[in-house]
Figure 1 (cartoon, rainbow, N blue to C red):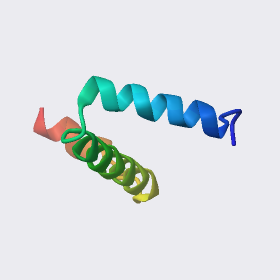
Figure 2: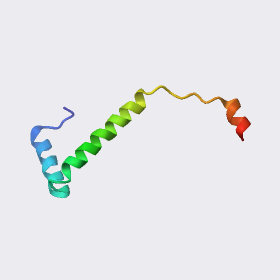
Figure 3: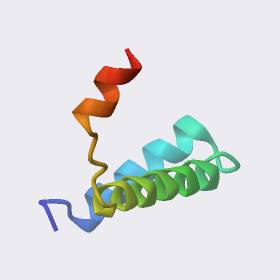
Figure 4: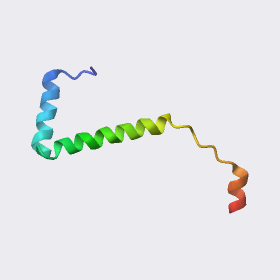
Length: 59
C-alpha cells in the first residue's frame, strides 16, 4: 500500500480534519475525486489531430 500503514493514514486524516474542519472535509474529498475522474477521462480520450495546412491558412 505504498508504505502507508493504518496509523499513518489515521494521522493524515486527523491532521486534515484539524486543518480544514469537519464541514469542509467532504467537499475536499468530492472535489479531489471529480478531479481525478476528469484527469483519467482526459487521458483516455482520443487525441485530437491538427491539420497543419488548415492552421497555416488561418494565419
